[in-house]
Amino acid sequence: MASSDYARIEQAILYLDTHAQEQPSLEDAAAHVGLSAFHFQRLFSQWAGISPKRFVQVHTLCSARRLLAERRSVLETSLEVGLSGSGRLHELFVTLTAMTPGEYKLGGEGLTVRYGVHASPFGECLLAVCERGICGLHFLSGTAAEDALAALRGEWPRATFVASAEDTAPWMERIFQPRPPGAAAPSLSVLVRGTPFQVQVWQALLRVPSGEVTTYEDLARAIGKPKAMRAVGSAVGDNPVGLLIPCHRVLRKTGIFGEYRWGASRKRAMLAWEDLRYAGADDELVAHVGRGGEDLSLAGAQR
Image 1: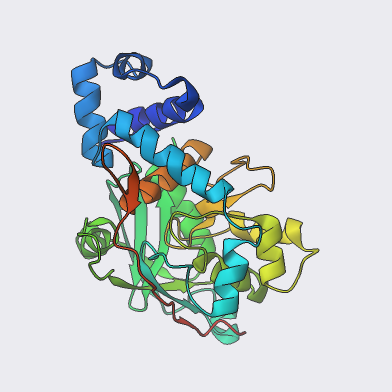
Image 2 (image 1 turned 30 degrees about the vertical axis):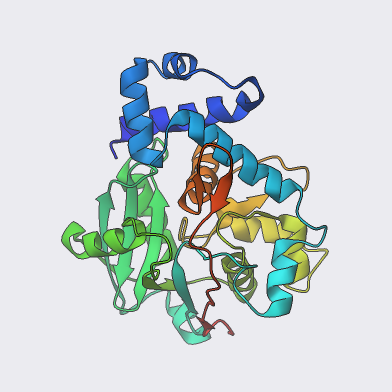
C-alpha cells in the first residue's frame, strides 16, 4: 500500500475510533481524510476487507470484549496454561532465537544482513534478514529509509549489510499474505540481539494473543519482576522487529495507547487490523472465526 494511502487509513481509523459512539457517516469519514465517499469506501475496504461502517461495529465489539474480560490478565492466563493465547491464533507463528553471550559481544560480526524497503498494510517498512531469519522490521514513520537503516546498523554494528529487496520480498509475502480462516500460519524465525532482560520481555510479548492487549504491569509480573515496569517499558520500546514481536499490544494501565516506536497512529491501526483479521460480521452479530490454539517455540534466549 502506498504511503499516502496508508496515511489516509491511519487518519480514518483514528477518526472512526474516536467518534464511534456518534456512528459517523461514510460521508463524514470520507471528508475527514479528503476523499469522496466512493473513493474512501473503496480504499478502506481494500485495506480492511470490510466497509467503514462494519469496521466500527467489529472494532467496537472487540474492544468491549477486552474490557469485559475476566479480571485476570490474558497474559497471566496464557502463561499458566502453557499456551500462546487463550483460544486465539497468533497472527504469525514465530520462533524467537537470541544470540549467545559470545555472539552478542561480537555485535553481528560475520553476519550478512540483507535488507529492502517494501510496502505493507502499515505503509513502507525496512525488512532485514540473515541466514538465521528476520533480524529487523522497521516501519518508516516520516523518516527516510536511511534513518531506519542507521538504526538497524546500530543494532548489528559489525554485520555486513547488503541492499537486496529481491531477497527480502519472499519474507514480506510470508508475513502479510492473506490466508483463509483456519489456514496454518507461516512459520517465521526471528533473530534478536538484546540483553537477557530485553529478550525476556520480548518472549513475554510473544505470548500476548493477536486481538488482545496487555499492560506494562502485566508484563513485569509475567517475567517475575513486578517492580521493573520502567525497565519493561524501555525493553518494549527497544523491540527491533515491529509487529512480529507485538509491542503494539501493550497499553498503559489506564487503557491509553501511549507512545509507540513507529507512531501511536500506526499502533492503533495494527490493533484494528488484528481485530479484523480474526473477526467477521453479519447483520446481527460479530462472530470470531478461525480461532484455535497455536504454541510458540522460544529457543536460545538464555545468555
